[in-house]
Length: 488
Ligand code: FES
Image (cartoon, rainbow, N blue to C red; front, side):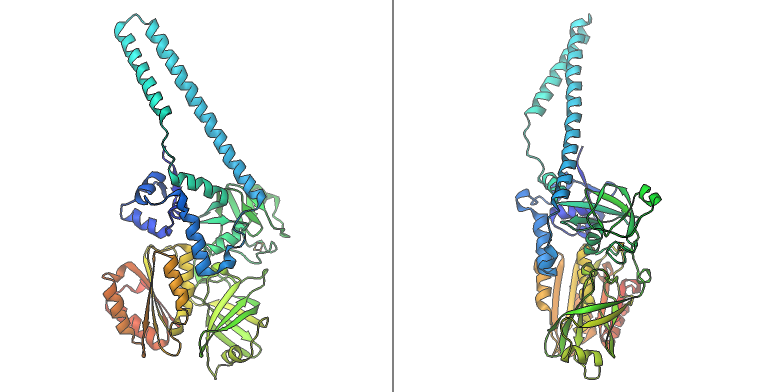
């Protein structure tokens, strides 16, 4: 029987986004068996996937290095204990297979003996001839099968290796999937994959990350003070923030799919860096305490307060890196918070964070490609959405049109170019303009894409730009329910 793989595992093996495989299934280019695909079909569709290229790891490492920074690659290897448990599981699987094969072999040998006995024992000439024929057929087929030395499908070999390096997790009821790599807990891995699973302290105290293990095995890797009741333990409940996956897992867990699922939180974060992005723009990098992280969806805003100064700003980073929050702050003499960021804020200073706010978020599980349109610092929430879409491997294609005026310019153009290098499904179109003309931009977007209706479109920028861009799109007949806008 052909080996079958989940879409996430298949995508990882051939080094494409899961959305690419979904698209191929929709277009009838790849067969799906209850959400699984066969290794042979995959190999036919991606014949260049070869073991020696080790595409999965290469791609993951490249994206992590170039898009999210090298710190994300720390602890890439599982602990020795987890590795040995996974190897033990694979050895047990191999042992079961061997025993199974042995039983088949015994059956075939007995069948051959019975045919011999029948041929010699029967008085009917025709029956004896038929038994002889059958015996000869069996001998020939056996010889052919045993003599075959076909190379194993490289994807099957890679998949076995991946099973040792990482565990695959399916979340019910959403059927979202992710991998637990290295020494991550199940919670760390879920967040890094862009899933908004329920959690609170991430430190074993609150019990909010409680989830039920439907199948598979977890192992405690971090101490927790929260005590699960005997009944909960019997039902398979575990704390995602304190356990890692020994092997493949199916869990039942709560997820936040829309802004209303996330409560307002107040957290004191610290300034990790204040970095110039040009004369008029500053990158403010904050970090939340390890034991008090902020839950938010990509594209949302936060209220930041330092002393008497306060501002509501879009988060410019991905929830998949939840402790690290970035903001793009414009110079503005009349804005007390911006003034502080430019003139006095230093590493280690405390900032109170309150939120998150806003519904400029990705549509959960939309099958459409995504087109982002940013004007100047409208890039901040768009960057958050883009990084989240990349982490979720959401879409077949991602496009970014960024219209920038002096003095800001495309202040993170290198980052956009690194995404272009790392991802086959991302296209970056920088447009320089003295005066941002939204309708002209929409015209050029339409010229590049014959049918915009296959996209979800996200627009962010100043009031006038966003209104003009959304108006132009709607006048062209673009569906309103596929359009999201944020004023920045
Ligand atoms: S998040 Fe609080 S116990 Fe896991």
